[in-house]
Image (cartoon, rainbow, N blue to C red; front, side, top):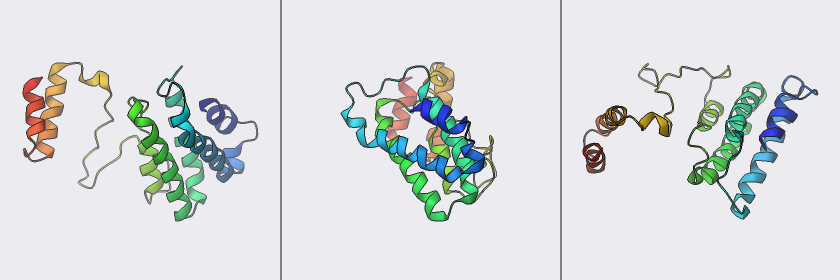
Length: 168
């Protein structure tokens, strides 16, 4: 899957991204929906060799950036839906742990037709924190800080958050 998206679409000699980005998106959709629709039949779902998911993520981002300016709102929404469906199908197996493919979904649903920004802003004008990976929480102090921020976000109303902070 990553080979098709990366080699045969993004880096294709046919230059799909510049000549026909809608076709590039259609290829990506075929590949991703095929995986989504058949993921449950895999004998060993959840195994990723050689960073395939990060290649899929970056390829989908590149394809979305090329195709978005020529897509209708309905086409953007449809693309966001099949990417999100793939996320929902594979995420329980930990395949999305170290990547944030939902950024591509958010990008497609946004009104911005430019390239995705490395520093997205939220409605308050504050920088949105980068996606955290499991390695970011190996440090007890970092974990405690994250849990404190989570508690503040939820207004201190979450007993579960309080329990998690005290147990760490």
